[in-house]
Length: 491
Image 1 (cartoon, rainbow, N blue to C red):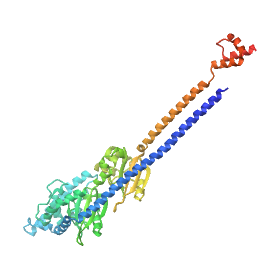
Image 2 (cartoon, one colour; image 1 turned 180 degrees about the vertical axis):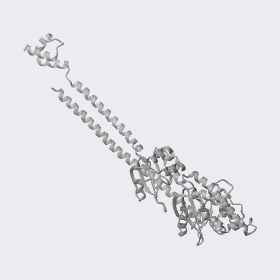
Image 3 (tube, one colour; image 1 turned 120 degrees about the vertical axis):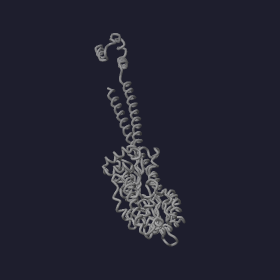
């Protein structure tokens, strides 16, 4: 009869151990998840703050640099000289070639024909290789050029002897104008300043007429008016008006820019003063490369910092990215498939595939974007632009003239790997403990069960010598029940 309590006690012990193991696993999971969440949050916030500081420092450096350049003697002299000689270029350049004024229109026709060929062939062909849509009709742009601008673009763009895109290498045109003599003096020094500033182009603009009197790269915007010309309503025209209207640095966000084959360009500018007189505006044209290098670690992500899926990126007020997506850089095919599944428009996907960049093209529309652009600094979990759940730390950027937000993200499935590994170890350990307890309990139960020998010994003790007298007559093969029955008969 003692067997049933032993079994019940053993069962209760086993159940208690199993429940303890279960709740231990759950508590360990809860605590580990909280610690891991805190670690992920701290890690992503630290990266976010680092990138935030780097981008803000980059624009502060640019602001300081352009103000310093505007005070350089070479820049002031170049601005004043180009401002004075620019309007005279057409007549001075044509003078040795024209025996009388009647030949000037013929020269202009020659210049214009050469420019038409350049616009419609050289430029348009390059544009078409870099864009999904064909080049727009450039004739209206060319028609807005006055005669002086036609002459300047002919000598410094169409008649350039080197291949397309190398106009910055031309020290000076072959004419004998005052403008070209100045160009020969100041072009290389300004090119060095451009390189130091990591600018795509440096432009000098007449503050009175809005004419671009100098450009390092000599794009289609060279010698055009930013007041009423073809590019007056672009970011370049906008930054000119802002910088020309106040004594501060003006900055305009990235957007497609036709002279740069509709690639993304931003502009920063400041006024140039000679004494108390404003004589012009100095403008840097900015490409995305320096920002991309900061945000993408020069496209080489360190595993110990970013893992396999971590990335940092910037989103602007228009909802598009301002640096390349990590997935695009590392696995373009998977990236294009992901954004297709996210239902990005076919034209945008085609442009990303052709241009090999997500800058200004990849829309990022989620809870984090709205909050960050509204000025919030938060840590959250949500579905990101490539349709994956990510942990994200985001904050607005403090750059005057720009409404940007910076994001530091890590995909949830990678972030939770340490938690899953820990839970697996805890579960394995708990199951081992349960198994050992069960084994010990089973052994104890077996030992606690009465054996044949124990029963016989008990009977001997209770029956005394009478049992010993009749022991020999009890067959050894009898069962316990038979032995008890036999003894009862002897009484």
